[in-house]
Length: 574
Image (cartoon, rainbow, N blue to C red; front, side, top):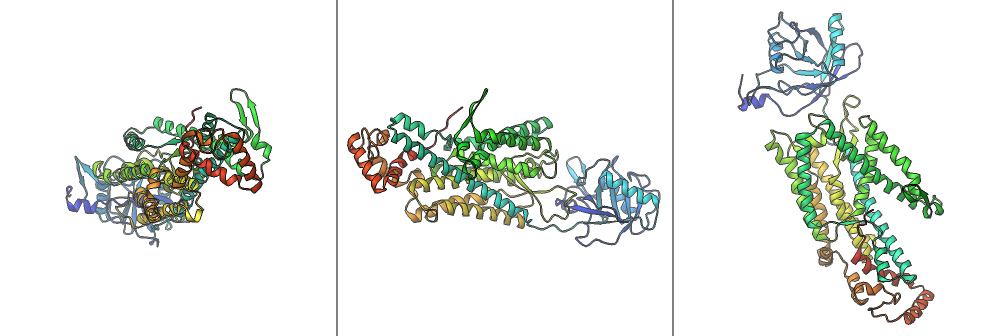
């Protein structure tokens, strides 16, 4: 036996692999977990079948009573001693392979024996595989029958470095970010319409400000960015150390309630944007007890939203539940991208680098602290406890050789969508205020840079850069999105405007309108009380002339942009 020196670590591997276990006679293949000691199994081409023999004693914790025939896999019950002891006794008896029979419907990777704090790994030359209780009963029945056809094939198929499911994730994430940006633009257009209506009806400045705040939002400050770093770190540690069934249920309930809110925002918005929905449904409300007036579209969508959430909550472990989880997650993310707002590029250049450090620390650095375990990966994938947190998008692997035996997914965390997505939404808002066409604005380059950052992440996963514990996506998304914004703004001479968050044209309009709220006061489109446009009579005359000339909408939009830039959609509670 070796201690925890170089030879012990050579014999005790860290790369875990699954195996296909195929009993002879046409039985269904099962899943096996290859031990972290001993040689690895053959690759994708199945070897010749091995005969089966039962161990005596059945746990193989002592020297076997008899030699094992050549080319035979020894079936050993789990328990009573270390897995390496079982392997050593099987090897000394002449077995070609060791099959450990688990009494539960699960398998795990058998590690080296632990002596105090040292890993003890004897030099083992036979491959060892664990099978679950169902496959164990099949193999024991074959071994007991003693027929010539009683045998088993075991091999570990080579898995692709990059699964096609990652490209599905790319489309889902990019589409979510684009949808959130378009939703934010729709809100700004709606605010502009409301402001225009208030101005036409002679609304005072306070009423115009109310119109600018009808769409709820929350500005992110650099203090909030730093606070989120601390809060997210504490949450990760709590989930890593204190995860239990009850805490998992709390997370499921919280995700369900948040997603219900997201669905109730997203689905009615889709109906409102659909040309096939009657206009009266979009404009009318139902007076419901307790809730009061509720738009018809919201009332129609609530049963569907509730059904999606309840179905997922009750069947979240089903093989098809990922579709509902992704639907709920996308609706929640789009709502967050709509509500959360970067007031300027400066805050974005603080938020994303800070969260990049968060991502790198909890993925790459924590394995050096927590005995090889990445806190981020353990929490995201469920680790040893199996409680997978629902705060991520997941797509089943499409080229998985273990499909049907082992539910495995390509994953992308919500933070890797919403954090860089805030920059993309800011680009859309800036383009709207600056009245930039899509081909000459910042939104399209930012969206492309976000997709490019995801492609870099998936490429790093395929190359296993930094190991096999996953990749911090923000390590690639942050330089792509922030770098594109800074480089493009500098090349166009608009970097200072991006850092301030207001296009130069909007500031000029604000200054020309007399400043403050007076630019949208009683004086009509040309200016108001305190503006340079004069009184109601001349303004009304000029407005009539613009109506006849077909110039009203363009001038009104120019006058409304300063208010949208200054006020923006503000948070309204209740």
